[in-house]
Length: 234
Image 1 (cartoon, rainbow, N blue to C red):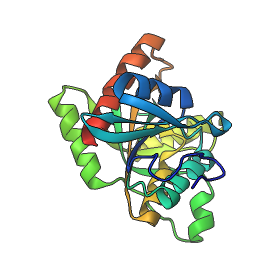
Image 2: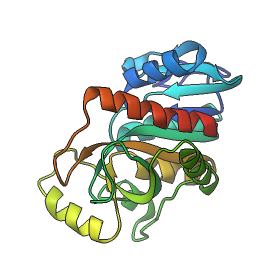
Image 3: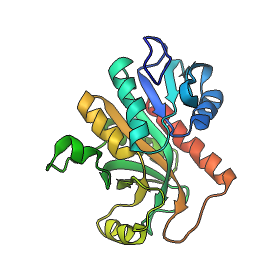
């Protein structure tokens, strides 16, 4: 059974899936980390692959940028393909002085300026959070591998280019929020709705306070560390 956005048949997708935003990163992960990867989806260029890691089946599915795009793919994975574990692997911008380039951010919970959860819950301010079991495993694995990992609340923004970014950064940072992405709030909300486990792991690629940015080589190396943590959890 396929969906409007995924041509996979039942059984083509593993129950545990990594979710990079960029479909080309999905291909990179499949080709460099998985054994015998097979592409199961090319609809709209949003690539998906299934292979194995240490003998266990794992899928990697691109989701695109932003909450609405991720919502489509995550919803279909949970509802139609019986996926029970989803780990977002992506990049983020730091808005806290103690969170530096190439640090791994483990998202505990997510605030947002999106209207998606207001539309769901009305006057209730729902607080979407990670699976504690996945979060704890990720943090312990990072420590074992001497990778600096920061467990923090993150801010999921609807806008990449935001006229109010400076004001939002100062306010959020003063409340302990350390990083900005564009997907986590929706992933955690959907996981709660479907009763499955979800976690966001991100590598800091940009420091929005200082303007520092990782080089292409640094992004690739740090991204690999994050992917290995995600795969070891699975």
